[in-house]
Image (tube, rainbow, N blue to C red):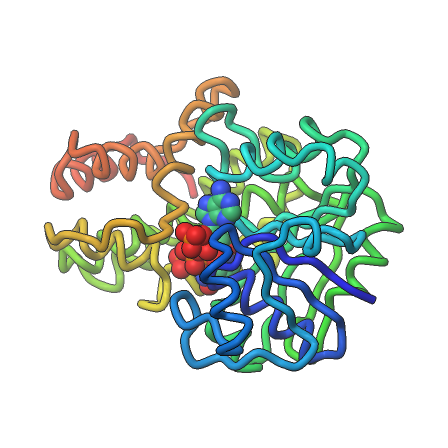
Length: 321
Ligand SMILES: NC(=O)C1=CN([C@@H]2O[C@H](COP(=O)(O)OP(=O)(O)OC[C@H]3O[C@@H](n4cnc5c(N)ncnc54)[C@H](OP(=O)(O)O)[C@@H]3O)[C@@H](O)[C@H]2O)C=CC1
Ligand SMILES: O=C(CO)COP(=O)(O)O
């Protein structure tokens, strides 16, 4: 059984390593052919995931046709790149089983990854793999558990079997909207948590923010028809906990830099920044309130400093929990 992984960043590479170590034949594709040839000979992705050797069954390639020959493809490019990837390669991807391995919402349309796939390629089987799992941990063989969400129950079962490994334990759901929202929004709250810690506001404030952030996530999810239990699962609460408390998270570190008024490494993948903006548009269309997401958007845009953002959040009317 072979699997193609499209996108050779940290996450795609770590999934490819885990699957190949479990005996699947895996082809990992990246857009820089020279870098992929180098990876194939060095047996390591030295740029994005240094120190994690490739198992024998993993092939790195710059040949898109080779990587897309399998029926099941994991799409692991950053969220804002997904739409172009799908439209540019619609002919090749149209009949495949496509598992989105990215977290976020499109700035252009407000759609999550599965919604994008389903609209652009209605014949494809679309699913999402999301949950608390740092690429470095997966690549080292440390235990992780994630949510595999697929609207079609039988396809979800098949993908769960195909993609579970010794250190990737997949739980299945049909609530795709809930899984998309949990994975996308936890990054926004992680930025906010980083801001709070970076600005020296303390761990009690972070716990308050995580809890109210979770309430905000659940509120918009319910407005969009997701099941609250999905948000309380790995893709929501689980990933929120991991990302808001670990300096391994790029979203959290980006927030810390904002809170300290420091520069942050340009070119780093920080999905929560675009997602915050995208979700504000979605929330407005559904008449939902997202005060933390609004504050994060304004801080990133330089329209609000951290003190003023806190004043705004704390000045909201007192209410029942
Ligand atoms: N890293 C992690 O621990 C986890 C990440 N994720 C999610 O995985 C997704 C990818 O993140 P991650 O792998 O960490 O990101 P990285 O920053 O490590 O890598 C991004 C990769 O995407 C490639 N890329 C960008 N645009 C395109 C494009 N148009 N076509 C093909 N390839 C492209 C880049 O290629 P190039 O090198 O040529 O620029 C690069 O290899 C994100 O949505 C993230 O939220 C999920 C769970 C864990
Ligand atoms: O999603 C992740 C862990 O589950 C990775 O988080 P960052 O993208 O913030 O590094």
